[in-house]
Length: 465
Image (cartoon, helix red, strand yellow):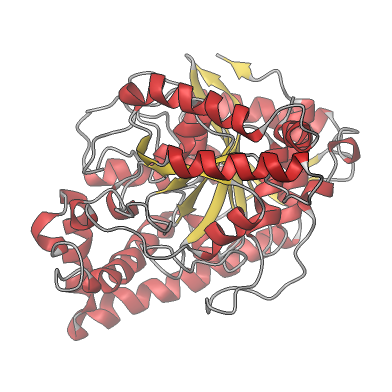
């Protein structure tokens, strides 16, 4: 039973929203002390919401597309009356005074917000080890990181603690943990989802997106959160597809007529075991009718320095409001090592004498990367390859900053270019999940979901080595 089918059972009163919620509450109570996925839960409000949904269904009243679905929210997205900490001591006592646009849309569609998930502090990380509230375990690979920065939201799906969750993706922060936890993660086109109510990491690259255990769940959430928001200047006014109508039947006749690009450099920088899994998935898609062409991207070495230089400057700017005057503590006084590193480098680069030397050159490099990726995508329906080039390290392992940043080399491209991208499980290496990434042209989010659905329909064998 997929999530859309479960949703229909709730709407037909075969499963009540309250029953669905109570099952997850039991799982959270049992598993969360060990996993540290949820930093805060609100069972009382969730139960009240579920009760109201059940009453509406019983009385034959109209309910939304997410009616009765239980949802976790990354702790940098504002939910009224819950702690919005961004997993930092800086905001440990800050309680949301309003709902982000995406939260309002989820609640309008009957979604039940159960709580706030763990993350890397201020989203500055890719392991969920930098949280002030302690690390999150990877439910799919015990003893390993779940990825980040939206590690709690991915782990919530992997541990079956909620139906759906949302996170934010600045350089892979949805797709990276989706890969490591063996779930589905989707980063929409930049501007397709309102960022109103999201605590910035890097405003020119941040995007909110969903996690789910199957493509029908991704579709339901995209139908809910995508769309123009007049209160948020980066959102695009566009004709949003009806994602739940992208029926798997339309695509289970394989990949005939689909042209997939495989960038050789993406495979060259990835571990051999990951390449074997990804190549196996590509071979299966080719057997199902896809045309696979080799592509070359000559600017891969530019991507990480470009991303991080922009990230440092924008993060420094975003954190100037955390000065301890209006709310919380002064960020420099209480934050962790990685947050301080980004603030200090951002402050340095932002100085007039260094702005041209570093930041403006990074913006020029970003234009080159965007132009090159756009050119590659012109000849194919999507680019396919590994989501992350290496397996998740063990919790507590000591890594140098550049070793940590190396996880991001294949995911930052979509953020620099503003294109949609996703991760779906392709297999396992010694029991550790490996994700396959699809990337497509701007606003071709529906094309990616179709490809994910086709992969899901045709490849539930999952290669294991």
